[in-house]
Length: 487
Ligand SMILES: Cc1cc2nc3c(=O)[nH]c(=O)nc-3n(C[C@H](O)[C@H](O)[C@H](O)COP(=O)(O)OP(=O)(O)OC[C@H]3O[C@@H](n4cnc5c(N)ncnc54)[C@H](O)[C@@H]3O)c2cc1C
Ligand SMILES: *[C@@H]1O[C@H](CO)[C@@H](O)[C@H](O)[C@H]1NC(C)=O
Ligand SMILES: *[C@@H]1O[C@H](CO)[C@@H](O)[C@H](O)[C@H]1NC(C)=O
Ligand SMILES: *[C@@H]1O[C@H](CO)[C@@H](O)[C@H](O)[C@H]1NC(C)=O
Ligand SMILES: *[C@@H]1O[C@H](CO)[C@@H](O)[C@H](O)[C@H]1NC(C)=O
Ligand SMILES: *[C@@H]1O[C@H](CO)[C@@H](O)[C@H](O)[C@H]1NC(C)=O
Ligand SMILES: *[C@@H]1O[C@H](CO)[C@@H](O)[C@H](O)[C@H]1NC(C)=O
Ligand SMILES: *[C@@H]1O[C@H](CO)[C@@H](O)[C@H](O)[C@H]1NC(C)=O
Image (cartoon, rainbow, N blue to C red; front, side):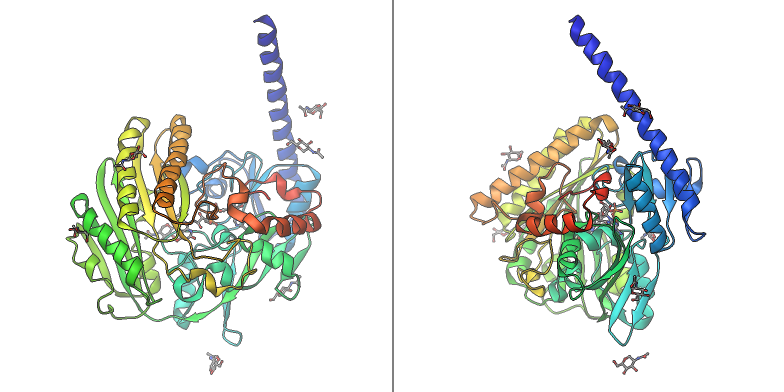
């Protein structure tokens, strides 16, 4: 009894001391950074508007109280910052759009780097490419490209950052036509942990080019991406919302869409939501052309809708028809499984999960229980070569990500909601396997996976190449001072 009390006390003291040292070291690092960087960059302390903006995330559970924030304005300054963080052994975070749903992935109690000043979008007509900075959200990229009638492969709903999206994979409205975002990257500028600014292409460094495409912040901080540009005209689509009595018909429509539609310009994103217990499924529809195509969306359009916003419009307008901003500002968890097909049996199991967890988590401040299914063409991974990118680690079969998303109010419910998202994914995976889907070892998408998912499940056979690259470019493991999926 006595011994354990003393031990607890001692370890408590050690912890307090370690924390105090960590803070001292971070304050020191903040001051060194403020001295070292050019006038294009700035350090902000708690209490300033910029600091608050820099540490804010889409999910409040991803927020942390950083010691200071820094907004670098040049790649060279990012190099200075990384060298200081490495030499002072200070924990830090790299935030793009701040949409990570795992705590600590782009937040920290140390130094918060916010990439917001990397906000250029440059269309290069001659090479048919677009350079975009890592502090942007996709809305800004689409808005900048609209006047040129071109587009890049990016996010589907409003507000999402380009940073984690582009370095993680990137499932887009244009994916059936052109692949994932990583499949369309032709080069990037990255600041290596030793401070060196470098332009990376397949030709200049194939291993690093491969590794960053899916490898997030393991190899340095990306400041700019150069991606293929595609012609983009007006599109057709938007959102409709249907009540629970239509969910059987919705399941049928989705199973049929997945089984029968082969036009790569057509996509849907059905999401089964329980909003404080009330069922309201949303269906985002997209067609890459100005007219509603014949037949493809009829079953969805026949559903009596509570809400409907569908029209011929700009790509940006379609992206902004999504309601995602309305559900942010809560705590949140994502989790995922990968499927090969969407049967009505599987969709019924999804509906059952929404109901089960809505009831189960009602006493745990849950406000929003949501499952989206993503009926891409199963050719979606054929737009990159077999060894094109760290994610997906295999392109042997097309995989359709399913996204579980719970939102709730109270920090003390975090562990329960996260455990539920783990259990629900396991349940749906078991249903899919029982119906014969070959997904027992299928990789999962890191941008949807819950913290604690083994990196083997995200990067699979890419890991040896990523680890060798990491050894080469970051022998001191400076990037180990920041969170995320660590190889
Ligand atoms: C509402 C919503 C909608 C979404 N829709 C889609 C979708 O349609 N398709 C899809 O594929 N995903 C989607 N996602 C998932 C999304 O891809 C991830 O949340 C992604 O990480 C967001 O990027 P971010 O820059 O906003 O995130 P952040 O939280 O800023 O960053 C995420 C991770 O990437 C790292 N990172 C960010 N920038 C850099 C950089 N410049 N260099 C190195 N590392 C960096 C961070 O350190 C962190 O570990 C969605 C998420 C949300 C919340
Ligand atoms: C904290 O720093 C002091 C002096 O800088 C050092 O002696 C001590 O060992 C450090 N404590 C921890 C837990 O790192
Ligand atoms: C860096 O800090 C971590 C704790 O944050 C500690 O475990 C590690 O030993 C430190 N490394 C060096 C080289 O000081
Ligand atoms: C863009 O390039 C094409 C040829 O690739 C050329 O015909 C066209 O005039 C260029 N447009 C502009 C605005 O420079
Ligand atoms: C969503 O939030 C982002 C970032 O705050 C903003 O730029 C965007 O316009 C918002 N979208 C809508 C539809 O309000
Ligand atoms: C990277 O390429 C850009 C133009 O694409 C150029 O301005 C920059 O100087 C290059 N950086 C390095 C370090 O070569
Ligand atoms: C869904 O499809 C099944 C099988 O074809 C059919 O029996 C059922 O009536 C359909 N449900 C609705 C609501 O259309
Ligand atoms: C509904 O979901 C719960 C929780 O995953 C599960 O235990 C139950 O078997 C499911 N019921 C049906 C009919 O699928």
